[in-house]
Length: 473
Ligand code: NAD
Image 1 (cartoon, rainbow, N blue to C red):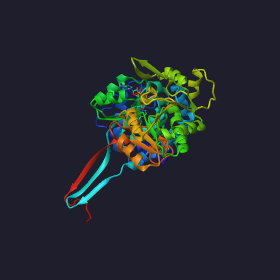
Image 2: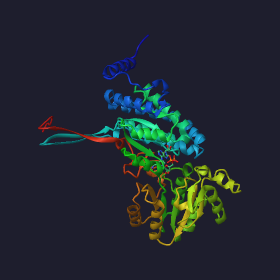
Image 3: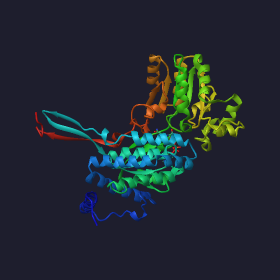
């Protein structure tokens, strides 16, 4: 049998790794591992811990680059089937849009290239600062972008030299396990360590508690609702929190209304509006309101009448003592299903319902994650800003504005303080889907890391060589 250079390299690496281990063989129950998927979170953590030590001690940055390329290739090959699988399991969104999200994270999540070294050379010596790994990261992922977040987080986190234990949303556990296994296989087949990415097969809250309590997990990253983000922040563990949004849009009296309608329609209907950064409510100045509503209808939006808004509200939200909560059964459902449910037979291709409401309506104030877009007409720009701020409710996530008045745009951007602010374009463009800049599925507003990439999941470490060390001047 002929053995190639690559196989020899792998055998030598395995032998060296074995020699390096000073402690006895790890007690992790690897027999329970199925390509990174474990029955017990304790085993998933231990395996990821061992893999990270291997990753950092025996692999070069060039290996990280090569393995990330293999991940992009395999995820690209399976993007269409993953998109379909997610839609099937979660019952939310649209396959064609999920495909775009998958392709965006595959192609536009930065790898090791963003980990640049900073050096200062002076009479006091030579200082370098580098981006070093945290170690094992615990990552919580949402139901709204489940496999997209796994692909995005895996690339960013392992590029930073970390390993990851995922706790995925129970409503998306099968597609997440399938995706994790595909990526795991790609890592191992291209010579990387097994169990660099792991998860517990049946995710639960207890697993999250075990993760936050385990000293080997150095960082928690939570992508999802504020309940989860706040629970992680309270745990005392270092946390990167990517929480909820309720992005407002302002359309002022100088805006190009056709453009505004086209972009708002695209963003608010994309994947049935389950993206945290999608346009959730519009505040339009009186002079522009009729034209905006007309142009949105021209794009294909269905305008709900007053009594129909009431009927949709009854489906979409649950009211208890005047407080409205989203009815999860309707999150991410097709616009046509809402219409059918209230007895309106329509073209299956209707992607977005629009309606006029007042500024305090539950559709405005509650993050619905449905293709139902409320439009509020107001007299002044100041009223638009005030109402947009109230609807965004301090999430500091995403906002957008359509205008040709630079002063108005600057005022709103300063006032709303969101992580993403798009001007004259769909908010999707702010996350690299049709816009400039990298893509991420973890937008860390509450803890301030912003649009995360490999750098966000690293620690800065300094190395100081004093007294003329290695300097050439
Ligand atoms: P969710 O909060 O219901 O679930 C998110 C994850 O947290 C799941 O894995 C869930 O099992 C877990 N979880 C929930 N409560 C928890 C708790 N108390 N302790 C520990 N873990 C807990 O959210 P979802 O429905 O899956 O996703 C939609 C929400 O996520 C929306 O609010 C959306 O805006 C937000 N989101 C934000 C971003 C971002 O980058 N900022 C990205 C995607 C989604």
